[in-house]
Image: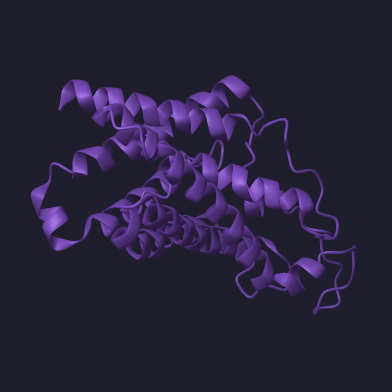
Length: 250
């Protein structure tokens, strides 16, 4: 794979991932969305389908890694680091692009996120909706050590199986690897996503957080930069540990 193919593939694939992921969060979170308050299960499946669509789209060009933690895990296992920077750059650009696209899809809903007002049933609604959680993760309890541990373990639960899937010959031959990974992401969201919102992907969290900081969203609130290191460091550590574990055990 050429550097150009890798970059383009990762940009497109990661943009699709974030479009689906931030899109489902916006659908569930924002007022005047038909999917409002449809719940955590919907969010988990939305992210899983985003992985499915993004990975299959990017696979012919870059292999569809879409996640710096996966890229680092593979590099630690194989010792091949020469193209890592291309993957990481493409993933970050794609994550930012996907966040902008999700914002444009829900532009009217974001613009309606203004002040306390009267809903269709004549009752007052609950006022402006916090928007950072649409783009990036926010811990349910702000405990940096616990949050970091959660992200490390959740990322190992993602990356180590992905590395092991390479040993399962039938998956590669049938082309169903991305499908299995998509369901893995859904499972992680349902089982391990409660404490932090399961970033498990530095680009997925940092790219949209940067976009959130400059988008003209009414009443958007803070971009949470005090927490931003956790969903970057935790997945990177988890990815590296996955590569080491896989190399030692398999």
